[in-house]
Image 1 (cartoon, one colour):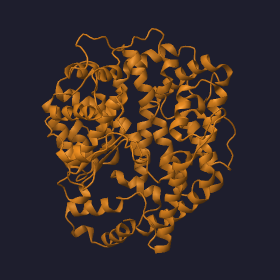
Image 2 (cartoon, helix red, strand yellow; image 1 turned 90 degrees about the vertical axis):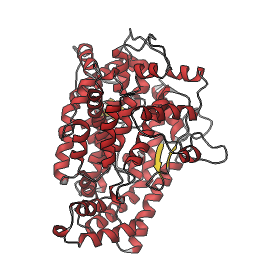
Image 3 (cartoon, rainbow, N blue to C red; image 1 turned 90 degrees about the horizontal axis):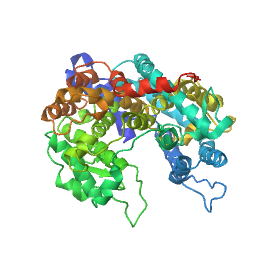
Image 4 (tube, rainbow, N blue to C red; image 1 turned 45 degrees about the horizontal axis):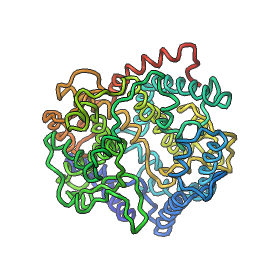
Length: 525
């Protein structure tokens, strides 16, 4: 597929753009950025670079670490549970360090992969692979670089406030092992990459936090099945005016873990024939988290079907951040009001108080923002040669400190390759889409609530049942990638620039509360 795409890109590059229709010019440009890896045209080098990526993926997937006291080596999922649940500092450091050793053997392969991937990108006119990735966003790479920094500057103050509050509460738990100022040691943040901090909620929860209805318990009490979870999510889209999923979705999706084989259970959505063979692949558990995840995954499927009749190269989202943001936008509407409308909770049922709810969500959404930026900011520098192989790890931790305000458990020399401890680096998967999606979902949510005529705080509003919001959403989804993303953004929100204002408004009550909690506490690092 890569070789065929390179050949087609080279043919398209020779077309006289001035004589092409606007649609054909758009398709030619989309073709050039349709894959995250363009291998060199030399067959041997093409085979080599794809083999390198496969090898790094395999090492990542098969890595195990046996922590002290464990009867056997543990996979990433089990190690992650330790970071989420344990409060033993020595065990946390053991688990964090043990997993990160996965990168050591990847460094030579990664270095060669960078060389070959850049060679392929340059053959079709890009300065390097990072510039090719940045060119997906309908602007020159340097302009996109500035756009990302602009968005980060809008939301950074909220992250810094959350960071300061988290650091102070962790210090109350772990004492001097967490500093009063400066970066937080990564092993204490409840996640292997310190990218989401929601496992820490029990430590960070406000003392007077009021808990509402337990969605997991309600689902279990109703004997909800995995397919029943998906039916709830399908009904959400039907309430907006979308057609139900095709019968083949129910016949071909994987909703539970198979008993006869090993599978990747990471939730994902598929359009197998790029028209209407829609499926999800997920090992659904009857939990509140999976209830929201199912709504997110169907967001992908309904997007895929909406653009399924467009010319092939237009069958994608306006940019890749849109695809993730649409699913997350739907998940933001899983509110107490929505749960009451579908009969899962009583109208008068108690709910989480606002600060408890928003803090829990911020530990997932706000904590993620700088990590979503760092991975590709590091790779862009690698691809353009600003970072050499002998300083990969040094620069990785410089960026993580600069943007995230975190530090490793101890010294990390160049014998380590800590970026390789994240699947997206090992597997050549661009990551900036997730940063953009975490900004866009709140911009989308605010606009659709206004369209639906829903008043009140953004975190309580749901578009469930609004045909008007559904029409506006469907208009954007049906555009696919046929127009530059500002057009799709305008169709959904009335705005032509990405903005963090929706996120800031959503978390405004939490922002005021954090300011009070942080009085007399160092903010920043």
